[in-house]
Image (cartoon, rainbow, N blue to C red; front, side):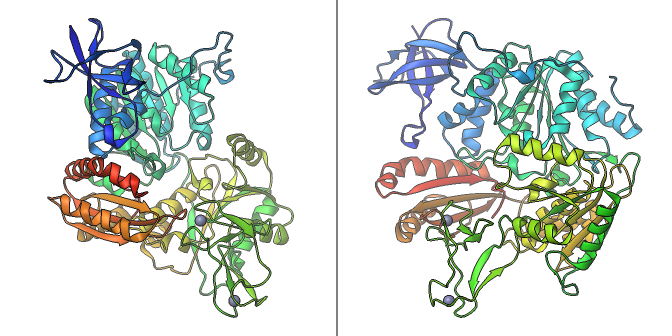
Length: 637
Ligand SMILES: [Zn+2]
Ligand SMILES: [Zn+2]
């Protein structure tokens, strides 16, 4: 008889442990099996082979072997569950996603067809050559590839991948969002043809299964995808590229709350691969910790001049006189502009001038946002109502619209500059990936156009003919009570500036009420090293990452008292770190919430203690209607 420890892929914390089953001779670690579990059946993963079941346990036989995953991915998942305070089953489900059975007359995914190989690879600069040499010949490890937008990072990725492929290794290229990186994806495909698999959220289940099969059987040796592609079942992995490594979308916001950047480093370590983190605006964490490869400035052009518009001296928000002037020139030249306003809707709040009431969401502690169809919407829970004509508290008709969102910006632009084509990019305008693709294509072909929208407009695009890039309101981001507010603001301005003047001299405008704010001053000078040096000093003084890890435990429930009580009990049970809180948070989706926060050098210990205590408390918490989240290395706080 042979026995194995398996984790049934069930999400409940209460059964988050291994179970022992009798297995056939040829079963190995990584086998996906079907087992009798309680009164039903479950899919399960074999994680360990053992000689005998534990004393007093009668091991039942498994029913069938239904598939397999790489043993390295089992190791990765078990580490992930431990590090992020999740359960092995939830982590294993990431590396062994359930995919439907093949239907017989399934056509291959359309986008795989008709793929030729590209050229000639581009000619390299000296710094690019050195970077590639380090990546392919310098041994395993994590390196930061730092260079301005347009400095040729993508070519470094491509040629490093090509060398890895020649040597028999596979590669993974992570991008923040496939739909927002069409040029990068296009270049990878053009260069490597049908050896590339693309994993993106718009794939049907059947297409996703096909792509995974091509990866698993070795037909596809390069995988491009968003964060979950870090789990792609590539054998003999030699290289993981994390493009735009500063992007917050690499963190998953549901359990397990993994960070694909951290997972990439762990997977590279397990497989002896190299992980390359590329950015024009690296995270302070990466700047401080990683071996740095510098590409320097933009190839063939200089970075655009940045003008800071002081809104204390300029009327006309959101369109100040200098911004209107710059846009008029864009209209005259029939060129292009990109305008960033990181707020959707018409106005972020409706406010009564008579009694001071702001109209709020009944489920969340936030103001409702006025939208173009005269609705008021909650951006957290989706609650929607018609905008009232009179104040619900005092019946005054004197309701003021506070601030501006992308829809108001669009209206004002249409009024002031009727000759410019306006293309709006935000979650309301481009709800589907096809809409996003067609909007971006329209902008590429346009003559005399403005691409306006939320942070989507600042991500990774490489458009020609962009004469002007403008941040309409830097203060939206700077004002957030978040230790990353300055980092994010700096990244946003610098990234947006990088979208301008790639082929001809461009200009950048930044509108703010705080022209002396550090991120504004340094971004205006394109001074990334200086900003990062000062940011690291500040983080050190406050014991924020990278000088400590943060672990956040959030409990939500129908009332605040049981939430706080549950957190007090957790706090009492966790030792080895100072825990701040419980502190109440904004109510969201009708749930009261509070959190504990640890600043610690031992995040794993805190997270695994918390996970253990939560699994013990799971039945009682469920009865009280409480849910809990452990968030290791949260991206905002
Ligand atoms: Zn009122
Ligand atoms: Zn709400």
